[in-house]
Image (cartoon, rainbow, N blue to C red):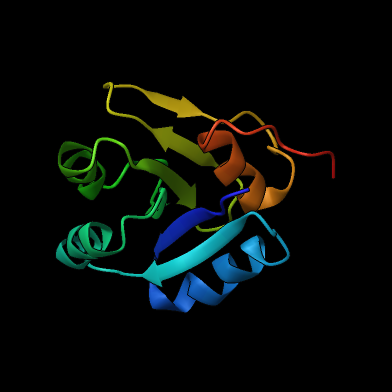
Length: 122
């Protein structure tokens, strides 16, 4: 099975915590990290991740999400709160889908849901 390639586009001070949220998930791989909008766009173009994880502030989707979808319509975007309790999936369509409750498997489970794969039982 091909691994889900993830670009972590969160502030450097949160990166280790997000990495821990993905640790132990054999089907996901963090392929890179970026922080500023232009860096996120360029890194997405260079690395072609399946999923870009962005930091959501006050439940607001970062503006770079629409630019990412415009440039790379096949990429999935997860907007995650700093405490990783709220996760939203952004799609090319102008809608925001909140994942209800704990998606199972923490951040890795949310990545699997965004990619359309079944989340295994914890």
